[in-house]
Length: 124
Image (tube, rainbow, N blue to C red; front, side):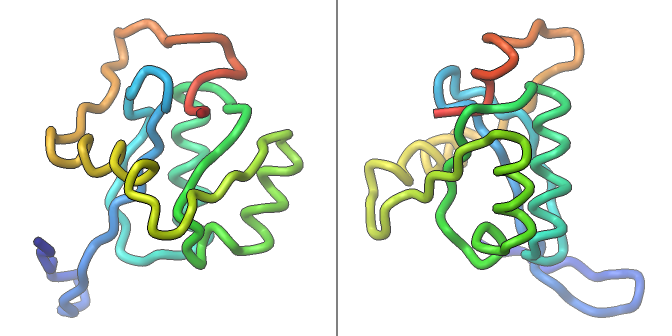
């Protein structure tokens, strides 16, 4: 379910989780809670994942408004990352995230070696 949190200003909000998962190893490169769903927060979460796991070849997502934002898509293109939205109403593509969420998020530990080549991590 959802859980609201109280901000410093006294406003109740529902936080949103941004998580980037390596499709090959099923490793969570980065996960972070944000108070909004914007291109800025998606960009921040993505850059955190890229710094931990290197640049991917392709980035897949559900095609939400933040992922459709021109500045986010142009940034991916500038980095040489292919954008690949998941198919609408496609449980086989969305199931990976649902299974991961059910098991609980396992963030990478700083002392663990990084998997794959610099262009393979966090890609499909």
